[in-house]
Image (cartoon, rainbow, N blue to C red; front, side, top):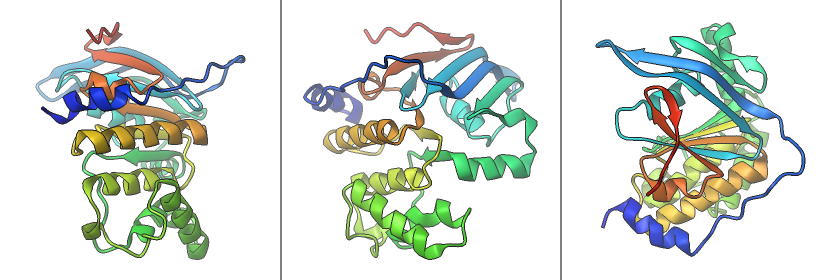
Length: 249
């Protein structure tokens, strides 16, 4: 049984409670007519439209090679689209130079990587505080907030430890704490449970979804697993002509 098949049973016992809003919520992330090709040349997708509101988690599914990770890189300003526009909290990424995009990424975006990317030579507290350290000179305040975030993800009192002391699930919790510590407007996650066992994966997914909703961020998670995607408020399937109707079967 692979991780994602096993998730189905774990997620079934912890249904997601979705909050229906009485009033429209402004979109934090707005994507219009986005298109991207890769060397070959090969077009990954075109005509991509997407709006994600505060407190909303959207899952993007699709087969390997359709451009899910590329889409996240575009949303994070790590790569540039061939056509179309991306706006985060009203700021058009295409209108920014490299320095301004880097600044926006540091201040407004949190990224949860599949491979964790926890720096082994820093303590867990320092790892979580890193996004704050990049935008502030108040090291004491950064570490205080980092400790609070570690506590929020169930790792209170572990800030002085190192990555070598943690399991895969605990490392992913540190990654989520780091992505949230600077209270970003947009949180991106690339296959956040790909390296985890089913039980741990279900817990991490629930934690991630709760964090997006609690902090009022716009969340976008890419995955190839319908079981993982089930925890999201919306599920979209990425295809060459943009998002297409998703049938989980």
